[in-house]
Image (cartoon, rainbow, N blue to C red; front, side, top):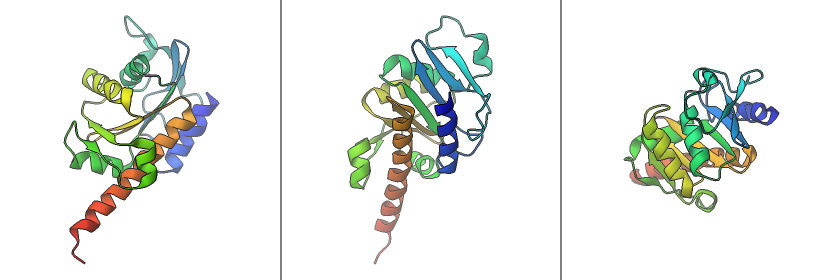
Length: 187
């Protein structure tokens, strides 16, 4: 739990989400720790719940868990993820709106190419079945994705790894946006 609290603060401090946007989770066996809906990522003490990953019917805590709980569940079920971070970083959101669903953002800088290879752009409403399915499918083969007009999801074997991916997505999108903009200028 303390790890999620620590990284919630780091997400906000790094500008990867505003305080009330985004969510964090960590898999622990057949359950997950997840932030509550509307909680401030930089003040998560007392705002993290334990809920089952695989449920036949929603748990009573699902109502106060993050609105993205179904997306987190789908990702845990379909990938090797042990931690998931969801942010709303500016350049990633901008870039997602410049790409069509199904396209991939191909980073320009060597570090982003090395860590991410490419970043899929997916669609789906907040917490929807569509987003759950598309996010889980894309994250089988990728470490991070951008949801069109919405934000980023990063998975990792640890919360720290997921944070590196979340940060790398924003870095890649910032560099890509600036390079694409500079190419349009005639020197």
